[in-house]
Amino acid sequence: MKVIVVKEPNDLETRVALSPQSAQKLASLGAELSAPEGYGEALGFSKAEFEKSKLSFFHEPDWASAEVVCMLGVPDSKFIDMLPEKTVLVSFLDPFRNPELVKQLAAKGISSLCMELIPRTTYAQKMDALSSQASLAGYAAVIIAADRIKKAFPMMSTPAGTIPPAKVFIIGAGVAGLQAIATAKRLGARVEAYDTRPVVEEQVQSLGARFVKIDVGETGQTEQGYAKALTEEQLELQRQQMAKFIAGSDILITTAQVFGRAAPRIVSKDMVEGMRPGSVIVDLAASTGGNVEGTVADKEVIINGVKIIGLSNFPAEVAKDASQMYANNVANLLEHAWNKESKRLELNLEDELISAVLLTHNGEIRDERIRALVEGSHA
Image (cartoon, one colour):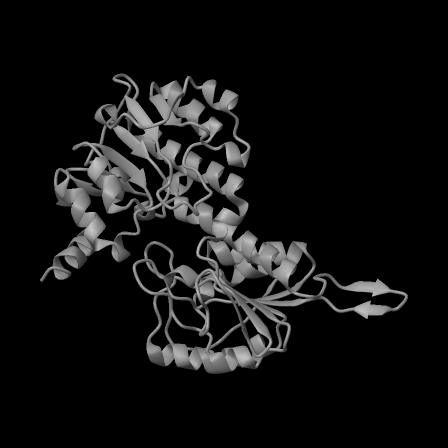
């Protein structure tokens, strides 16, 4: 079965969807692999490494023979037009923000495996691309903050005096937040963290951080393990109690995102102005609107001497590792759906995992939430 990876449509994307390790895994299943000339070279993946899996390189893809197409970034309309009918497409698709794209995939008869829809179950962890990328985003956020702030992270005792540790406050203790906590602690900072889910308190403390308790009434988490969205009244109550913790921090990192919705606005401009000049804020939700008032995607903004950093693609700051993780996620998903006897991908709709991740198939939009969104956008 012919599996091709393609150049990302976004020229700013530095991650790739296939690594030499994942290529060898797919080749062992019987996949015939091909990729663009120079694929992965900028990240240090050599042509010789890829050729161990008998991968062939092309200048232009042979779309007529394409059966499975793997990529990372959201494709554009022009790209989908080039795909043959019945192709299996594996990628991030950001379906809630791209209803026209989903409609086009269904109309073209593309079977799309949407990486955002991987269920958060123990078995599916090795395929969970959202989590793998979020973990690296949390790490990158702390490293960027450490680079931008004009002070040391650890406490230092010197003949000239003692330097106190940097104070880091992290909002959100999901995958990204927990990795941010662990990284800040390794660098020697004093770390506090807050999450609306009391159930994560033990995880925060196990990493050496102090869990901040803020009473906003009834909260909880979804079946998938994400924090439930707060009401506007709860958000305002949260802001009022959180302001003092933010004001006392040198670095603030926000990680709150809700799949399919704009990021909740957690930090107001007044709260930003309450921080000491020279402080740094890193907003991991910049690509979906930002948790912080004043965040501008892919810009560094200064408000009252406080620097707000809002990159759209934090995992790309560690692009090689992010690529290896994503490529493993994709290879594990394909292996799960692979028929080892026929050496072909089989989309078994009775399989719980495949059914969950299969966004479009046989001309239909299979996810009820996204189908309702697409139909509503054309009502």
